[in-house]
Image (cartoon, rainbow, N blue to C red; front, side, top):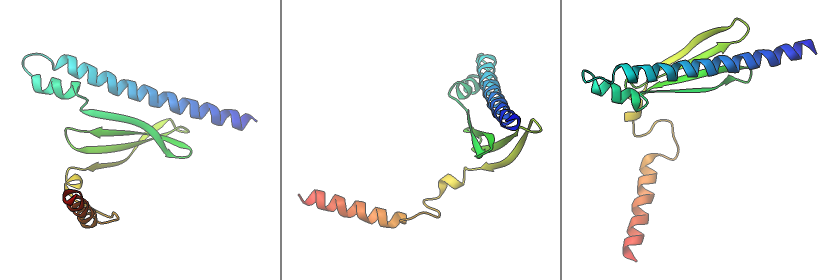
Amino acid sequence: MFEERRGVARRRAARWVLVLLLAAAVGGLAIEAAVGSGPEAPEEASAAAAGRIVAVAGKITPDTHGLYLVDLKNGTISVYQYLGGSRKLRLLAVRNYTFDVQLDEYNTEPPVREIRKLVQERRRVTDEK
C-alpha cells in the first residue's frame, strides 16, 4: 500500500514538473516577445509571438513522462525525459528535420506514385462526365 502511494506521488510530481517546464517555456517566449518587440528587432518579435517554439508534454514510456520541443525557426525537435526517482531531466534526442521534410516519401505505403496515378485516373473520369 505504501509503495502504491509513493508511485502515485511520483507520478503527480512528474506531472507538476512538466507543467512547470511548460510554463517556463511559455514565459520565456512571452519575455522574448516583449523584449524583442522594440523597433530594433521587429522580425524576432513576430517570430516569438507566432510561436517559434512548440512544447508538448507526453509519455516516453508507460512509466515516464517527457517534453518534446519543436523549434520551428531552426527546424529541430528535441526530446527530454523526466526521471522522477532522481528528479532529473535527461536529453534523449535532437534532430534537425529540415531535410526530412523535403523528401516526397520515405518508408511509406502505398508509394506516392501509386496515389498520384489514382488521383490522375479519378480526375480523368470526372472530366469525362
